[in-house]
Length: 191
Image 1 (cartoon, rainbow, N blue to C red):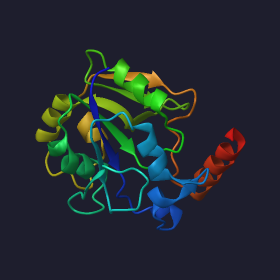
Image 2 (cartoon, one colour):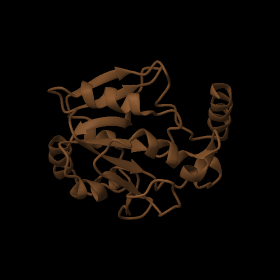
Image 3 (tube, one colour):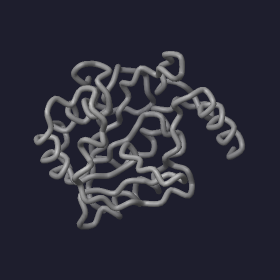
């Protein structure tokens, strides 16, 4: 299997969750961040961009985006210089159902493209549940003005991407209290 690093964006303000520290919220008795870190355990290097938090995963490298809270594109800009593998996973820290099998599927599907990303049940691309060629991201990032506050789509719009269906809901994220409650119900049902 192709070697990859992982970048986990964990610096959001959790505004829609009342300012909660979203990566620290629990689903199935485990913090969201730990669930994502478990899914990317096969990465050579794991870079978490956001405030340092306790985690059950040793060896995580912590970085901060500039400015702090500057969004996912700023997180990518902070982490990409530290990536050395040919592929890089870009992951949100609030994906409670991401698993190692989905990560492996994304990595395998990149092929000759610039990346592979999950597409949710509604047909929406999930650029923070994806694997990309490191060189393609670096080229795209170099062509952009300051990344803070810009959408991640500004980085990925020109890339040749393989869209990977997500029937198991691995790209389900927890942005609202309702989504968090739904994730907790689903996790309880899967036990």
